[in-house]
Image 1 (tube, rainbow, N blue to C red):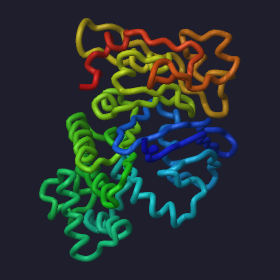
Image 2: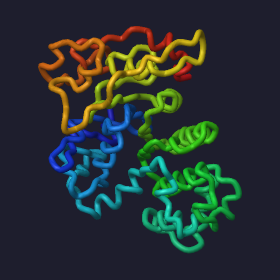
Image 3: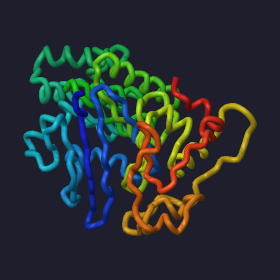
Length: 331
């Protein structure tokens, strides 16, 4: 079998000596859709910013990030320039802060085409129009002359997706791409990403805290907590039987769309600060199943069942998630 497109091993990041990532292992295959989920501060975005060399100079990064076997950590700037936006593209949750407000949309897309495909002039402009057509932008030719402030949030996100596609990437990392959008536009953007993936064979990594988005979009889910992946499995298996108490807590906190109303089961406390990690399992202070054994050491990812791993000394998988949130089951 062919190896993974991207393979991350032992990725660790610290800022001014304070660990933010504490050993992340993750692989993404060609054409696969993988989700990274968890509360804010768990390290989801930092994982991919570190992998692509986009963190500030004060960040200390170690481990391994390989793109089809070629190491990216510590690679020459010229190598990274070819990878970023070319083979691997990234879109962010706030398109308004990612687009230059003083340049027209067409100029910004043409710049991406010139950098990654060597196009210029009329050919680049026509390619930019086709990209806007591909992402469902109405009246694409006229929109090339618009400034970002003249477009809605959903339209600006479509522009960002068009710019990401300019380099014909093999992997698209979408960091909370629908957070700033209303529900109707969210659905349109997610459907657009799914269509592009089907049409091009591109792999997708979706960074999100919205489990409903993940259920509809991704094949596999990695749950992150306090700088580590604590559960990894197929999307349908996660929603029918999560093994880690944290994943169970996330699902139990979702309001049911069917059946009688019930109080939401919130996870007590919050994600620990990086400089104040508890001993052993980082989730133990919030876990209803915690015992003194949880403080003995940091549990590694262990196989619960074929294709299902969890970082817990006694993982469990009751069917409560399926009963509480049946609407999340992927089609």
